[in-house]
Length: 152
Image (cartoon, rainbow, N blue to C red; front, side, top):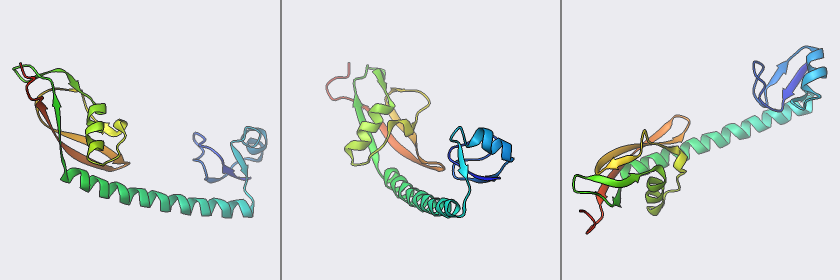
Protein backbone atom coordinates (compact mmCIF):
# COMPACT_ATOMS: atom_id res chain seq x y z
CA UNK A 1 0.00 0.00 0.00
CA UNK A 2 1.34 3.44 -0.89
CA UNK A 3 1.13 6.08 1.83
CA UNK A 4 2.23 9.69 2.20
CA UNK A 5 4.15 10.33 5.41
CA UNK A 6 2.83 13.20 7.53
CA UNK A 7 5.95 13.19 9.71
CA UNK A 8 9.44 11.72 9.73
CA UNK A 9 9.39 7.97 10.42
CA UNK A 10 12.70 6.33 11.35
CA UNK A 11 13.98 3.83 8.77
CA UNK A 12 11.05 4.63 6.48
CA UNK A 13 11.22 8.21 5.24
CA UNK A 14 10.73 11.90 5.85
CA UNK A 15 7.60 14.00 5.94
CA UNK A 16 6.05 14.26 2.46
CA UNK A 17 7.68 11.10 1.12
CA UNK A 18 5.51 8.62 -0.75
CA UNK A 19 6.46 5.14 0.41
CA UNK A 20 5.23 1.63 -0.30
CA UNK A 21 4.60 -0.36 2.91
CA UNK A 22 2.83 -3.56 3.87
CA UNK A 23 -0.95 -3.21 4.08
CA UNK A 24 -1.02 -4.30 7.72
CA UNK A 25 1.71 -1.86 8.75
CA UNK A 26 -0.18 0.99 7.11
CA UNK A 27 -3.66 0.08 8.43
CA UNK A 28 -2.62 -0.98 11.94
CA UNK A 29 0.13 1.50 12.73
CA UNK A 30 0.84 4.40 10.36
CA UNK A 31 -2.74 5.46 9.59
CA UNK A 32 -4.21 5.15 13.15
CA UNK A 33 -1.18 6.96 14.67
CA UNK A 34 -1.66 9.83 12.23
CA UNK A 35 1.83 9.35 10.80
CA UNK A 36 0.62 8.83 7.24
CA UNK A 37 -2.36 9.09 4.89
CA UNK A 38 -3.27 6.85 2.02
CA UNK A 39 -1.71 8.00 -1.25
CA UNK A 40 -4.52 8.94 -3.59
CA UNK A 41 -3.96 10.63 -6.93
CA UNK A 42 -5.08 14.03 -5.59
CA UNK A 43 -2.90 13.82 -2.49
CA UNK A 44 0.14 12.80 -4.53
CA UNK A 45 -0.33 15.88 -6.73
CA UNK A 46 -0.69 18.05 -3.59
CA UNK A 47 2.53 16.64 -2.17
CA UNK A 48 4.38 17.29 -5.41
CA UNK A 49 3.21 20.91 -5.44
CA UNK A 50 4.25 21.36 -1.80
CA UNK A 51 7.68 19.89 -2.54
CA UNK A 52 8.16 22.33 -5.43
CA UNK A 53 7.17 25.26 -3.21
CA UNK A 54 9.50 24.06 -0.44
CA UNK A 55 12.42 23.71 -2.88
CA UNK A 56 11.77 27.19 -4.23
CA UNK A 57 11.66 28.60 -0.69
CA UNK A 58 14.91 26.82 0.21
CA UNK A 59 16.62 28.16 -2.92
CA UNK A 60 15.52 31.70 -2.05
CA UNK A 61 16.74 31.29 1.55
CA UNK A 62 20.10 30.03 0.29
CA UNK A 63 20.44 33.03 -2.04
CA UNK A 64 19.64 35.46 0.78
CA UNK A 65 22.13 33.70 3.11
CA UNK A 66 24.88 34.03 0.49
CA UNK A 67 24.20 37.76 0.12
CA UNK A 68 24.16 38.22 3.89
CA UNK A 69 27.44 36.29 4.24
CA UNK A 70 29.16 38.56 1.70
CA UNK A 71 27.85 41.68 3.42
CA UNK A 72 28.89 40.47 6.89
CA UNK A 73 32.39 39.53 5.75
CA UNK A 74 32.84 43.00 4.25
CA UNK A 75 32.09 44.62 7.63
CA UNK A 76 34.28 44.76 10.72
CA UNK A 77 32.83 44.78 14.20
CA UNK A 78 34.24 46.26 17.40
CA UNK A 79 33.16 45.58 20.96
CA UNK A 80 34.38 47.79 23.81
CA UNK A 81 34.55 46.09 27.22
CA UNK A 82 36.12 46.65 30.62
CA UNK A 83 39.61 45.18 30.79
CA UNK A 84 42.58 44.94 33.16
CA UNK A 85 46.10 46.13 32.35
CA UNK A 86 47.25 42.80 30.86
CA UNK A 87 44.39 42.86 28.39
CA UNK A 88 42.31 40.39 30.39
CA UNK A 89 38.59 41.17 30.35
CA UNK A 90 36.42 41.64 33.41
CA UNK A 91 33.91 39.01 32.33
CA UNK A 92 33.79 37.84 28.73
CA UNK A 93 32.35 38.54 25.29
CA UNK A 94 29.51 36.11 24.61
CA UNK A 95 27.48 35.21 21.55
CA UNK A 96 24.76 37.56 22.86
CA UNK A 97 27.22 40.49 22.89
CA UNK A 98 28.34 39.68 19.34
CA UNK A 99 24.73 39.38 18.12
CA UNK A 100 23.87 42.77 19.63
CA UNK A 101 26.90 44.40 17.96
CA UNK A 102 26.00 42.86 14.59
CA UNK A 103 22.40 44.07 14.95
CA UNK A 104 23.65 47.63 15.59
CA UNK A 105 25.01 47.60 12.02
CA UNK A 106 21.62 46.55 10.64
CA UNK A 107 22.00 42.78 10.32
CA UNK A 108 19.43 40.50 11.92
CA UNK A 109 21.26 37.52 13.45
CA UNK A 110 20.18 34.76 15.81
CA UNK A 111 22.85 34.35 18.50
CA UNK A 112 22.51 30.57 18.26
CA UNK A 113 24.02 30.73 14.78
CA UNK A 114 27.26 32.21 16.09
CA UNK A 115 29.87 29.44 16.33
CA UNK A 116 32.07 30.36 19.30
CA UNK A 117 34.27 27.66 20.86
CA UNK A 118 34.48 29.51 24.17
CA UNK A 119 33.60 33.01 25.33
CA UNK A 120 36.24 35.62 24.46
CA UNK A 121 38.21 36.65 27.56
CA UNK A 122 41.09 38.72 26.11
CA UNK A 123 41.47 41.89 24.07
CA UNK A 124 42.43 41.43 20.42
CA UNK A 125 41.19 40.53 16.98
CA UNK A 126 39.11 37.44 16.37
CA UNK A 127 37.50 35.63 13.46
CA UNK A 128 34.06 34.42 14.50
CA UNK A 129 32.18 31.90 12.38
CA UNK A 130 28.51 32.48 11.74
CA UNK A 131 26.40 29.67 10.29
CA UNK A 132 23.75 31.27 8.10
CA UNK A 133 22.41 28.23 6.26
CA UNK A 134 23.07 24.48 6.09
CA UNK A 135 26.40 24.89 4.28
CA UNK A 136 26.86 28.67 4.16
CA UNK A 137 29.02 30.34 6.78
CA UNK A 138 30.48 33.82 7.21
CA UNK A 139 33.68 34.84 8.98
CA UNK A 140 33.11 37.95 11.10
CA UNK A 141 36.08 40.21 11.83
CA UNK A 142 35.68 41.09 15.50
CA UNK A 143 37.95 43.38 17.48
CA UNK A 144 37.67 43.45 21.26
CA UNK A 145 38.99 46.71 22.72
CA UNK A 146 39.14 48.22 26.20
CA UNK A 147 36.54 50.85 27.03
CA UNK A 148 38.03 54.33 27.08
CA UNK A 149 38.98 55.48 30.58
CA UNK A 150 38.16 52.14 32.16
CA UNK A 151 41.46 50.32 31.66
CA UNK A 152 43.26 49.86 34.98
